[in-house]
Image (cartoon, rainbow, N blue to C red):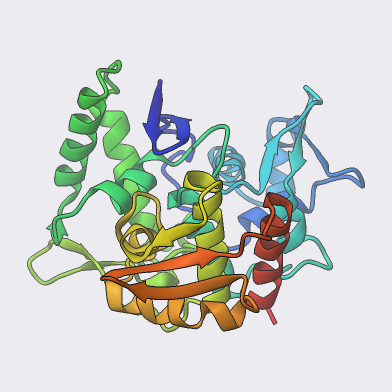
Length: 315
């Protein structure tokens, strides 16, 4: 089953996490298993030593594998018996990486983008995350609201139905990912979910959930720029401009994924020309506010710029 959004196509995927939210050191733990060529043997998640290796229960080992794939830290390889540590995983979590202990909040924002943003991918493993942050527009919601929304979305695609219990577990896990650590003394609740510190979802006194919209002071301009370039590559790579409306409200855009209001997006775009040494320029003419990309910027140079923005986020 696939879903098409702009130029990207991905499978609907509502399982794999075993109902455990993404934890802080999980991605790092998998990255440590890569050999010198970056291969990660699939057997590490299933052999008799897997529980000891990761220090968690068997179901959580499966969850760790899921999250590492969903966040694009590990990917399929040309070797049937192994996965491959992705370029992003190598950049972040190796011993000389940008965030080897997964403790920088930029990593949390980046993994949120990986789960919810519009980017080029072969298989999207976090459909609920993508749909919740990009297609649900009402100011308040409950878990049943999101379940109903997803079921209607699937029906509109005229695809085979997914069991409601499967969707329910996925939605509940999604919300748990953005919720502070519970008071439970269970071993799986000892560490804070990686995405909880973003405070993107709130629970009000009436028991309703809502997004925290507006400026995000702990979101680095460079992570925003990285996401903007990823969005550009996924939807309009061959175009020379992108409007403020697209960047703020487009499906899978930085504005929608990070829940930034239009003024907050515009404020970040004002400084983009300086941050990219003139590669991107902000213009406002005849009521059209947009970013224009230098004609000299090739796809290869654009990818290089994206990596440079990532590195600057951790300085």
